[in-house]
Image (tube, rainbow, N blue to C red; front, side):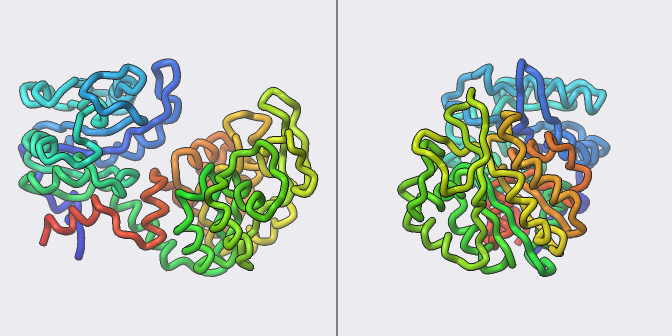
Length: 383
């Protein structure tokens, strides 16, 4: 069953409600990485050419869902950034009533996760959102795995609904991964093995080689009885991690970067020499140098998650070494997730990646073959 694309929606003189993904990093009241905003622009510009009014929905971070404005999570910096990109006024509005009564052409509703009922797909909130427009455009692929009022519920109560240009682009690119050419090299990092367990199992069957980094690797080493000191780990996942570690094509880096704490000088150590008062903060670049042929011979590379605490420069070299090898490979490369995009941007290799997915969880679930609630809602709308 196909999803109705934006190009098939009759937008003429219609009010349009757009669910975008503008969950961007903000520091000092300014957007520090505009990637997700920029990727939303083609859909926004397409709508503005034909519609009479555009109302944008997005979330930012994880605020309390209490109907109160929390400045730390306000979309005000996003609205300013969007104004700069469009060269047109974008009005930030505080509530749904204000959206109904405003005559401005471009509105952005405050962080949708401020509103009670968003995350449990509340019926009343879904109806209120649907009442704002004639057409709903879902373009937030990064939240399409969430069954929320602004991603799923609104679809049931609005006259017409379709997918935006970014969602169409994302699904087309990720379909190439599902039908990927071998050899396939997958690299998964990040803090928790629990959030990626089913994907790791799935990719271990699909990929020729699967490299695990970050807290995931720590948990695997801990499960095998190795000393990992004070490193980030999930003891509750040791049984599953032990089974993963024994899969033949799963590679766990055996050279790591440790320090006594964040202020200490980093040291490279083999995994057998980690001390009880050490913390593993990164993977050694030497590990990646030792498996360079896996990158040069790969036909497809999938990367999600940093190898360590890449935000701190002295613990970023493992992630940068990985980024460099992905960029220099002739393989079709796809990366996804906010931290992965930030790491790739920091390494200066974004332009060398074949496809950069704005999604993290949705990216992983889609390539795993799981159905995404927001996508299913769009399909059902057009039955």
